[in-house]
Amino acid sequence: MRVLRYSKHRGRPPGFTLIELMVVVVILGILATIIMPRILDRPEQARRMKAKVQIKNFQSALALLKTDTGSFPTTVEGLEALVSDPGVRGWKRGGYIEGGRVPLDPWGNPYIYICPGMQGGDYDLESYGKDGEDGGIEDGADIESWNLDYE
Image 1 (tube, rainbow, N blue to C red):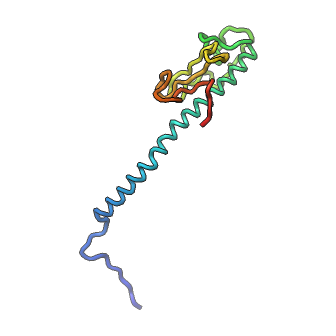
Image 2 (image 1 turned 180 degrees about the vertical axis):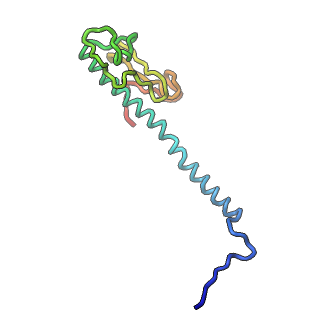
Image 3 (image 1 turned 135 degrees about the vertical axis):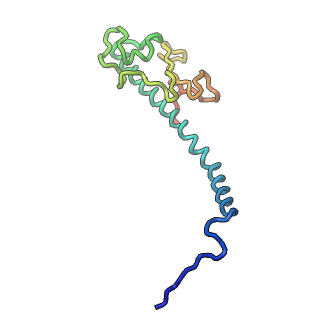
């Protein structure tokens, strides 16, 4: 019976050469520059979509509140009228939003509610977006109830 023996490369330690490691690092760098911007943009896109969905939920809750009370909350009453009784007749116990509190926008800022609306509707409902300022740092930075387009 013959036993085959495999010997390691004599005179050369096992492992990668410096050139092999540099080639791998360069390839990873190229992949990172191509893929990372696409991956990093997704969380911001998800936050914008969440703000749009929350605004739609507020619109539904406000419509129910108007049906029950006959009017939308004033600017002073704000969105808090959806969770706590503003003292108007017809307001339903338990509120119009689950959880008992008005959620903040995905960036941690309160939504802006103005009634009567200045954009031609009954009310304006807006999130200032990532920068938290009206107008935003770029076109389309604000999410507005009168201009909801889904990307």
